[in-house]
Length: 216
Ligand code: SAH
Image 1 (tube, protein in one colour):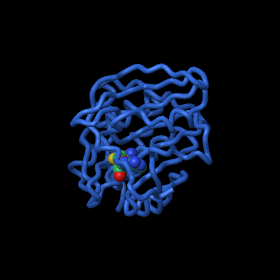
Image 2 (tube, rainbow, N blue to C red):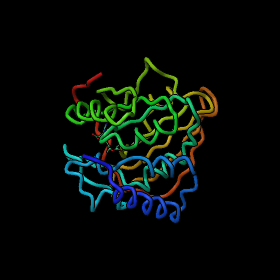
Image 3 (cartoon, rainbow, N blue to C red):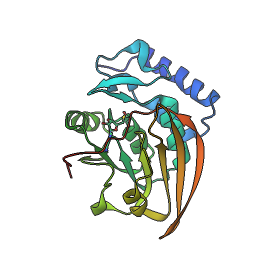
Image 4 (tube, rainbow, N blue to C red):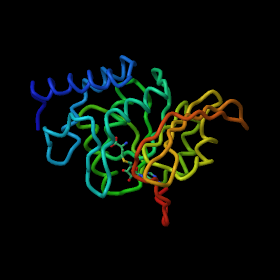
């Protein structure tokens, strides 16, 4: 599968659309302009890949809507070399955006098939990060603390273990809610025992599932 002028043109249009919807961070817009999103989808549906929509990626999961990816990333204010933990690797698209922003990315997925597929696919496009098969509710204690943590699935509550694994001064972006929609939360860790929360509108995510037999 290749990246053609048509794909590149469609990407430019998508970037314009995201910018008109309020994404102002130039580095994020550049990342989206660079990443061949059609290659992240099962049959390279060119007519869908550059619409601002979520799309099924197999195993009952979806690749997030580009606006949502950009919005969450913008809230996180990623800086070069920051250590970032993503919960919900999925297709790897969000992880690719974080990698282009020069973050040191750790990403966890609980679905084995998706984990395996994305772990081999993403580096083949030149995006390198640490792939972990496991339970996002537990985070990655061995690699903590993180500058930033990003949940790309809707959690019924803010996972306590993840706040613990955040640096003081660090930020976590998490869609919270167990219905059809979630409220975007920005959690900033203000000291070892305190954090502040602001909310940033409603979104719709696949649920963050609780593992019965944990992978990590
Ligand atoms: N970031 C992804 C979006 C994937 S959708 C992308 O850019 O494509 C959310 C993902 O979260 C799904 O792949 C789902 O399997 C995963 N997920 C759900 N509950 C989880 C949990 N407890 N731990 C880790 N991953 C989880």
